[in-house]
Amino acid sequence: MKKIIGRKPVLEALNSGQEIDRIIISFGQKGNIIDSIRVAAKKRKVKITQLSPYKFKSYDKNQNTQGVVAIISDHKYWDAGDLIASAAQADKPLLLVLDSIQDTHNLGAILRTAESAGVAGVIITERNSASINETVEKTSAGAVSHLRIAKAANLRSAMEKIKEAGFWIVGTSLQGGKNYTEVDYSGATAIVMGNEEKGIRRLTAEQCDFLVKLPMKGKIQSLNVSVTAGIILYEVLRQRGA
Image (cartoon, rainbow, N blue to C red):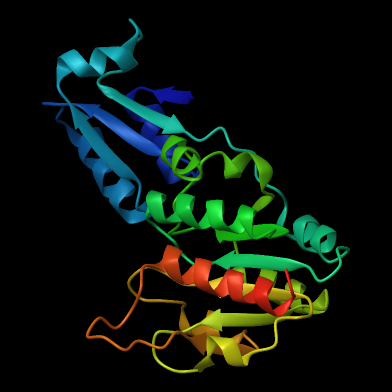
């Protein structure tokens, strides 16, 4: 676990776009810089946790933290282009694209299923997405260590590369599209899962070759995104005779 300590260093890290898992602030901290940290963290959707001064001591370690510590993810991400090119070499490759999955437990559960289903690589968005942290690693039951994961600063560009590599792109939709069993997944396929509340973004949907949905027979209109991912990934395996 890597840390950035001190008010100004943490604020600079936020403003520079550095990958930050979460920020921990000792309860009672005030001032202009603290206010700026809160604003910047909210804008970047970085979680802030407040701890009592006693509990905060476990992060302080006699360092001059000024009551603020930022926790940085240690995970090493693949380059998206390299991941796509490598995956394309496999026989009937399967990619998973996650468009703004923000809940760490959802991300971990999806990655666990992806590894079990033999996914060749996972691409997540650089912004508005959960990072690979301790919670994701734990929820994935270790799958993170066995998956190739890339971050895409521009998802549209990454999807164009996926198409150029010979993949068909299938996006999940909350509104319309074909029944998920009606699409042929036998060839090189990339599955796109969207945000927990809003689904995939409009521009992302426009890049897809097909949109699919799950039939909903009850009063609830959608399933948890990790459940949906599991259903579709294993439909891919079923069609491929796995």
